[in-house]
Structures are given as structure tokens and as C-alpha cells.
Length: 52
Image (cartoon, rainbow, N blue to C red; front, side):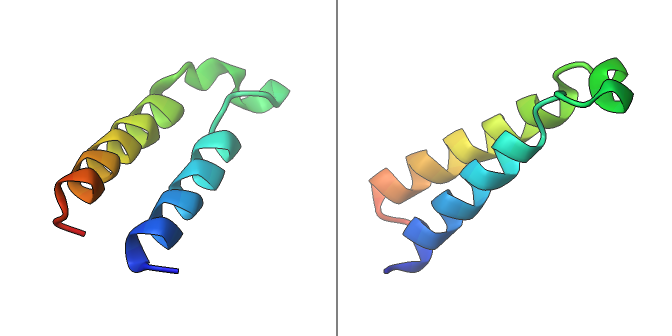
């Protein structure tokens, strides 16, 4: 596996973990998952362009 693939897998797992599913995290809104989603999109674009 390449570094980019491992990074994508880790970011997807963190993105799933940041979804506000627990009662104490419902007040957070979509901030944590939105930021991680943006990072995931940037990494995907870099991976497709061959930078990673």
C-alpha cells in the first residue's frame, strides 16, 4: 500500500468518527466532520494529481 492510500483510509475512519452521533457531541454541529471532509477532499485531489 502506498502512503496516499493509507492516508485516505485513516482520514475516512476519522471522518466517520467525527460525525456527531453521541448526545454530548450533538451541540458541535457538523464542524468537526466538515473540516475532516475538506481535508479528505484535498488529499484525494493531491493523490489524483500525483503529488502524494
